Length: 167
Image 1 (cartoon, one colour):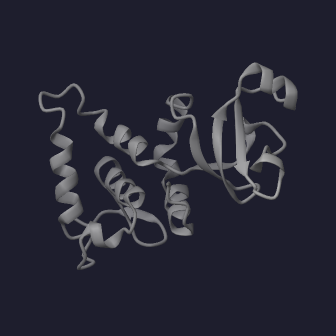
Image 2 (cartoon, rainbow, N blue to C red; image 1 turned 45 degrees about the vertical axis):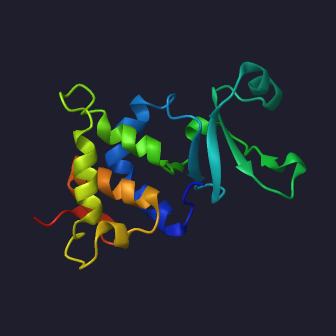
């Protein structure tokens, strides 16, 4: 299951300025995607909606947000409004974070060279904390997001925001 803790939502929200272009370019390929719907303050999924469903619910765009709400019929709730205009925060899965980082290595002679960098990151000291990255982050999603942000953007998580890494 994906990390939906308040800390991970905060980490993802803070990473959005750096990862926004990736989201825009890969919007359809990223679906279905777990999101934090800031309008409803719920963890939901951003999905592709077939035309028959779009007709039934009266939406024009091909994206639909589905939110789990167990007290409603069948446990699904579809918020009103177009998905494309809702303020959302992507909650990255591990495979999506791996794709963001490794895409630059796929054409290299050693397309798995990034694995060694990830292992060094996991077991190395994380930003003068005295702890390894493995100890600093309690889920694989947090660990992978921290790795992507450090390697692609030179930023580290200080518990509240991404900031430039200390050299």
